Image (cartoon, rainbow, N blue to C red; front, side):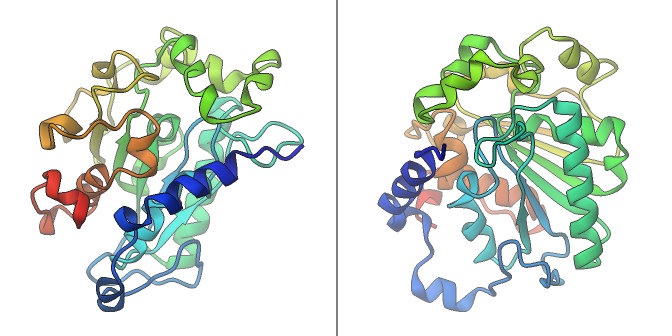
Length: 283
């Protein structure tokens, strides 16, 4: 059965169109590089394609209805994909074993690199999508192919099952999946064998630039401070330190929050970074 949450998310993004879509003038002046256009060639200004990694109970389209066009309008080659789909499912992802999902990310990254002729990619992930790539970097050779990993509310050190189930009201029908075997959820529980393996020996690997963007209002990955990484070349930032008025929670930080988007864009292009403030919501 096809679930209705795609339409719900689309409606949410359309309702906030004035906040997430560039004006006609800015869109006209910025090069459009295409979303999931495998003929896209990175520019000298943005030489690395960006791979977007969705979160649990999501997919590679709906999670990025706002952020992918945000990057596209700024001249990036942008790509997203689905991972962790259970057999017979084509809409809700992030539920398969995370090690297997990381292999899917590896395969997709190789496809992007081959198509764009780039040396490395940058990765931006939301929720599980900000944590899962760390397995790729650490165990599947991804560090040689990735310049930067930006996590939007990533569960880097796991969360509680209650935290994960807090997502269910956003995705009608998802609760039925809890009755089946869901290794993607089990792997995210704090203290799981997967989390112990992922974080043993340190949070980071050499050669990759890490950014973690969190919100104090996160009701899924709790406490939000567990999202931060330790190690060299890590930038941990809390949205409310950038804009005290920002009330985005776990879902909004990845779907619609242009303040988070601006800080993520800074991480992708630090040489041209500008200060992130409440006014970044209008840029």
